[in-house]
Length: 218
Length: 193
Image: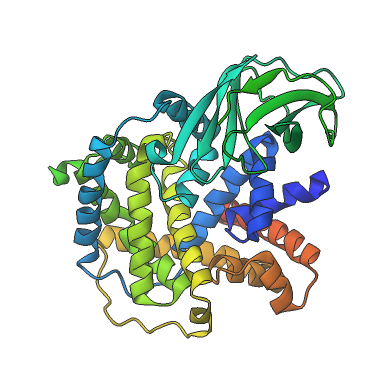
């Protein structure tokens, strides 16, 4: 999709009005587009204003408050006893980073019923500082710090690598010098690795350079 | 103890929530439960499903509060975003509900305080005024998307407009609404002078 048309989806995203496939595509775009991140944050505010215009009318039944508090109480107990996952700190770092971007945590909370501890695990990266964070359903995000900006006219491209096959999983550029979080545009099967290569702007169908970062098998 | 939280900002309450303080969840519900329920009910059209949406949303907030970066402007918007998403998920699952008329108010209860009721009324009027000033086609797209839970392609079909038109109308509409809401206060000042 053309860049300008992609930006236009910010409104539909803030209103929860994108069709599901387009929503996934837009979230991938959003992870690497600071213009859209700012716009979605502003639009989300306007959408929330619409909430207040909803209607005067019946309020909630008086027992709803108690039911929510009881559910929260019973929700907390198993969390305390759950065994720690392999990379809880990395997962937390990813979520915290996403939260710092102002979008990821928002999206994660909106779309997932799972807590970060149970929903995510991470595998480390070689070649760059960071990790690949995976949801239980194979959705994945790359969290990377300290990569240099790609040369002019080039982009970073993500790959799902399995045996001799390499499937493109999205393009990204860097946001400043801090940590970058990019959601992969395809799910990652068990045992695959995630690679990052430098490609000509617009991306390639197959990798044309050696990976600058490569994950352990997920 | 819960009484002590009433004077805290939303962000401070969310910070306590992130440390699993149950009183903070109660406080947040007291502040936003009413507005959340009315929004959910407008979208899902059914009192029981609206309760489900609100409960799901507050539990998601309970679990996700540790991840929320406090920001004065965004805390309330974040809460309403979570509620709206839950309501839309439910209405898309329960497709037939959309045809149903909105139930009349049956169990109306006053909001927590007179001050809250006044604030909510002012807020509602401010946004409704802004909505009323949008061109009809733009307002229609916004209202059907946000309150009706329709996706862009569903709207294209329902309204008989090309999908590309719906996308750009929705963008323009939300952009204009933002300007109208933000500009409402300034215009008042200008009229007086």
